[in-house]
Length: 259
Image (tube, rainbow, N blue to C red; front, side, top):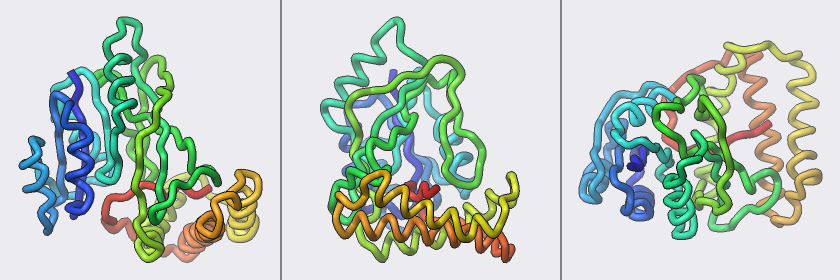
């Protein structure tokens, strides 16, 4: 049995397409952070079991959803992600195997402002999303949460679709929030050498995304993403240096994985 888990906060524009793409699953669990729009009602109307809870951090919120699931397998999705028919069929075939691994990485086709970003490290962008409940749990960290699985893992061939930031304005707002969370994570981890973190790391981020990972092939959006990721890298280390640490609760969105 497969349980799909989704965490939400004011995702009315996304939740219907997300849940319709997994309507075939035996169970859908939505943990909602007291949305003020129609997210919770829409999810219930689409057959999901909805729980409204206060924010516990990205990993805490996702683990709460996993704990409520009754399926042997978990598929963890964000509200702006969609499962395609080829991926559905591959997952069903995979979960039916006696020799199935305990977890599977799934590639993501990330769309930015309506364009599929194929370069700059944005594709295939593998994330471990399908796993056996008894074997997996989200690692507790401030940002960039990921599933830790006990046992063997594998890769699926078909990607899911991720309709990330719909506009440049949306992206910049989210980057502002995530830079604070990333600064907090730096504070809690190994301290970097600040002069290199504020100069060399942003420069390398741009060079890596735009040239080494061929971001220039995505046109002006590739240029924008490389430049903005460089700025994000600078901003998170600058905020760390200034102790500008604020673990405020951002709205749910995931693609801010700058170097």
